[in-house]
Image: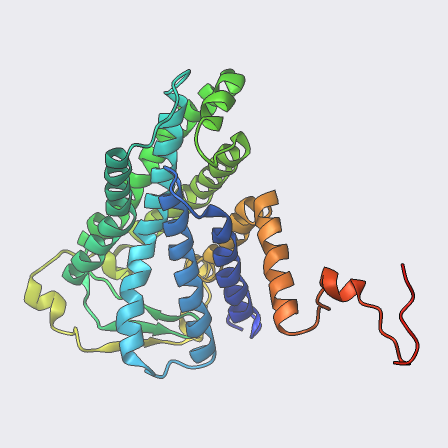
Length: 346
C-alpha cells in the first residue's frame, strides 16, 4: 500500500495555507526596513500553497499530462521558492542584526536609504531566485515530472544541480545562522536599550521585533536540517539518483527536454523508498506549516485583530446582516399616528 495522504486533506491544507499567508499582511502596510522581507516571504509561501492546492486536486489519483503550460511555469516557481524563502529569512536576519548594532542611535529611514534598502532586499528575495530559475535550464533534462498526488515537479540531471539549486540554499541559510546568535545575544543582554531604539521607528514596537525574530529562527529550524538530510540522501544513492551523474554535454542533457516523465505513487512509495516518501510529504506540507507559523506570529497582533473586526463589520453592513445604527436625527423623531393630536412637548 503506497502512502497517499487521504484526499482531500492536502488541498484543504494548502488552501488554508494560502489564506493564512495573506491575511496578516493587512497589519504591515507602510515602509519599514523589514516589511519587504515579510511581504515577499508571504508571497513565496502563498504562491506555493496555491500551486500545491491546484496540483493536489488535478493529480491526486493520476499522472495524466493536463495543463502542460501550468507545469512549465510552476516547476520554475518551485525552484524559485526554494531560494526565495531562505533569502527572505536572511533579509530579516540582516535587518534585525543592523538594529542590534545601533544601540543608542535613533533609526532614520531617509528617502535615499529607503530606496537603497528596497533595491537590496528585492534583489535578494526576488532577483536572486529568478536568476536561479533561469539557470536551472542548464540541468533540466525533461520538460517536467508528474508525480501522482504531488503534481508537477522539476526534473534535473547531473551533479551540477547541487551547485545551482542546493549551494545557494546552504549559502543563504548559513549566513542567517551566523547572524542569528549575535542578534539574540545582543537583544537579550541589552533588552531595555534595544526597546528604546526599536521604538524610535515609526510604527515599530519591541513586540514586532520579537515576532520577526521568532519567524526567522523557526524558518532556520525548519529549513537547514531538512536541507542537509535531503542533500545527503540524494548524494548517497549513487547512480540510482539522476543528480549524481556527470554533466556530459549540453546536447546530452537536453536531448529529452520535450519528454514528460510520469511517476505513479506505487513507484515513489515503494518499499525501500522511505526518504523519497519523506521528501514528497515534506514538499506537500512545509509551506502549510510555514503559513501557520506566519499567521500565528503576525496575524494575531492587536493591530491585526482590529483590522479583522473592521473588515467583518464592513462585510456585515454591506450584506445587511448588521443593523445600521440610527442617526441622531432619526432617534430624536417622535412619530404620531394621530395628526390631529399634537406631539408632546419634551
